[in-house]
Length: 286
Image (cartoon, rainbow, N blue to C red; front, side, top):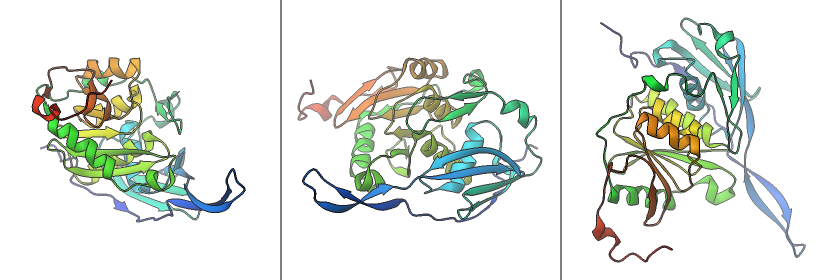
């Protein structure tokens, strides 16, 4: 019998860090005031005492970020392979201990692709590696009313962005539009990795979930969403050509420009259950 990937839960630290930093500013009239700006700090990841990468992060969910990074980079296939994740902000590092190490780690991390977007993410290996092995639910559907519920939930969500700006947010929802996680970081790639890590820890599968990001739907975001098994990816921003191509290849539904009652369905055009009555009283958007 094959062991469940959730049989083991790694030992985790509960590291905390301030998410904002106060600075003094002077405006155009010479007036002084204090504003909050997002914190940004390095987090160097060590796996089995080997330095792997340094992530620039807000620091709100460092253990989940580390697990999600290892998952989405395809360096660790199962959370049961991880013994512990210990963050120490006094030295800006996280120590990961695995059960059996990472096979061929030198070769697998030798090729790096720098991805687009703020925070400048990167992925190891070819971007399209293992894409053909991903199978998203082919009959997944989403109601138009659920899209609007998700957009409204994000609009009213308390966030670091509203307080200090300069961050991206990602969220995981059920297909009914119930918010499960909301995570912000200095780069959207960090936020999606942190959610991937939390899904692992909480034993959540992605086939009946919806992912929302404030950032663009790039190839990196689509690939990570597909690796998490999520069939729906929403954004208040747009997409890129490669993001669109990858979504079509894996059968993912992309919805862009999601604001108010407006959205653009880019792929899987038959996957949304439209509800025209929801727009009867809505103003037309040019």
